[in-house]
Amino acid sequence: MTTALVTGASAGIGLAFAHRLAHDGNDLVLVARDRARLDRLARELHAAHGVEVEVLVADLSDRAATWQVCDRLAEAERPIDLLVNNAGFGLRAKFLDNDLSNEEAGLDVMVRAVMLTCHAAGRAMRERGSGAIVNVSSVASFIANGTYSAEKAFVTVFSEALASELAGTGVTVTALCPGFTRTEFHDRARVQVSALPGWLWLEADAVVQQALTDVAAGKVISVPGAQWKVVTTAVRILPRPLVRGGPMRALDRFRRKG
Ligand SMILES: NC(=O)c1ccc[n+]([C@@H]2O[C@H](COP(=O)([O-])OP(=O)(O)OC[C@H]3O[C@@H](n4cnc5c(N)ncnc54)[C@H](OP(=O)(O)O)[C@@H]3O)[C@@H](O)[C@H]2O)c1
Image (cartoon, rainbow, N blue to C red; front, side, top):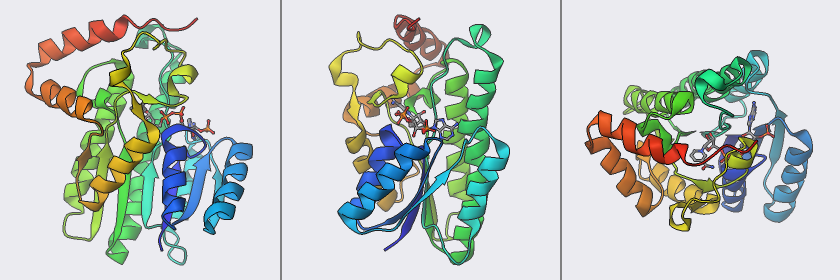
């Protein structure tokens, strides 16, 4: 039995990770801002699967709160075997039209917190000679859709670099790159996605299933769903001017909610 720490465990993909990992007999540390949701989930998972579940309330846009998560990851007596860096959100407007506070929070949650927690967990896992890190990135990391793409590009490339740095230590790092997944993400970002064709969508449980299969296989980049494997392969082959043009115009068709 192992212990997994999941950020953004109160909803969406993080919630699906929590359910699946508890079902498989892992103890959990659940991290997010919404204490009521985390407490309810902890009780539910303990009752259903008999696993131990800690709740660690933290706003990962806050540096001090992020350090508390890092401290928990570094604890030698209560080791964390799997870190799932999943917390994130969609930005509410294009860069020049957005509030800088929203932009900075995106950078803090999806870049700084990922880097700090990987530093803490990576050192502790390397010391023990075992462990796994999953950083939830996005197919957006392969295109150029605003600061969100830039932040997720950091997550993908950083994960690849850290995987190389940890090669041969017994610790693996996987960048999980989902496409559109049915969660609270788009409502929270007020993005209108009802016009998207159904075949593009992934379910959070399937994303997690593929992620854990790829972690077990030691894959560095995990792209769930055949449709998104085709898209990401094409995007990585096409000349960048084409990548900047087509997908960006397609995404712009999806109007933001008021
Ligand atoms: N859904 C998609 O289509 C999609 C596609 C590709 C990648 N992703 C990525 O998948 C990850 C999970 O997103 P999701 O789709 O599951 O979205 P979601 O349903 O909105 O869940 C987001 C989670 O992140 C947590 N979170 C947000 N801001 C936080 C903060 N400042 N501090 C701590 N926790 C915070 C939320 O918890 P609290 O509100 O309780 O803090 C929630 O648990 C994100 O990194 C996202 O970028 C999503």
